[in-house]
Length: 461
Image (cartoon, rainbow, N blue to C red; front, side):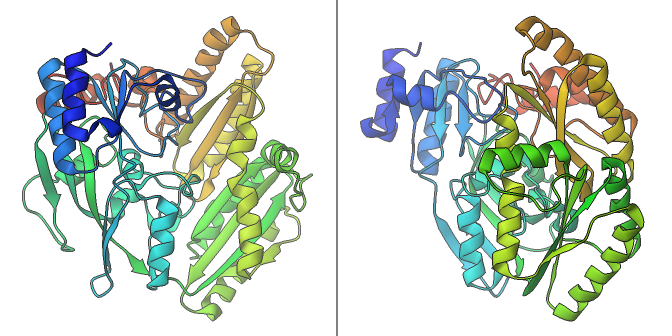
């Protein structure tokens, strides 16, 4: 419970109309999209300036109160949960696109801008921001930076970190810091920009970002193809790259994911009775080159016992297929309580990971549904509780997760590709990282946040 004096000071900083302690607001901000976790903050504040956030963080240091930055609430590892109560700072009022510099291919925006809004605004100027998380219609750009989001197009274009030139952020002690530069080259001191990106709100609260952006590709083509086994679909992935083609997206869905989505949204996937599917998109500036890429991809696919290849070459057809793909996550989560694991391995190891996951889930009698970004080896593994009791789920279910993570690491991978460690995965961190590495991370956190007030209890205890 926060002292009444602190609440009064928060109202003095933000205005009474921007400070919330009512149960409806606290419940709304107690959850994100991670499993069924819920932790009530003591107060939610909605500041509208960088100076106000700095004052809030300084106040929190004075009273040793946790501060939790909050974006769109779409996180999948509990990164924005108030697990120790405290002050939750909603970034929803930081929603301005400040500048689009078409000549230098740059854009400066605030962290509360919705990713899809940013992308569509750029497209009107013939520009392109490729990072494309599944929640792009509701997630905030600031959350994308906090988790270093990727999405389907990471296979060709990389992740959030590859597009950030500079940031303004509030340090854990309340200082306003500007890091990076609006130049392509910059080796001027430590790279604080990249330190903050992916730090899950534990090292700073981002208040402004300058991105580099790209010319908008003029042409796209998307194909959907089905296979007689997940292993054959996964094996085809590496062969596509060996042909010299780099797709702009290369997505994998097993049959269970497809059928679940059909049932959830009342739509039909083509060839849905096959055991696995690949979505393969190519984009670029010359239609003739894309047609040659599609031909090369088809040559590969037909060697792996695939169905007919369905080509979507109009915006309407492509959007229809992508709508099916984007619905998968929500469909799977509607079945029962679940754990979603965000494993990533070198793409050639994907067949081994798939087989190993199924073997582990058979051993523990747990149903799994797998889908994800096959082009970069990022497999989302959903374990479903279904009819298991809580005791089984909290013991055998966790042991299954540990075995999956050990397998992933043994294949040269790691335990999170784009969802982060946050709250839900922190007890598994030592499977992927050495004690020495974790110790160094702790020292960085302690140095920057001596009172441990900024999003405490995330990544590690």
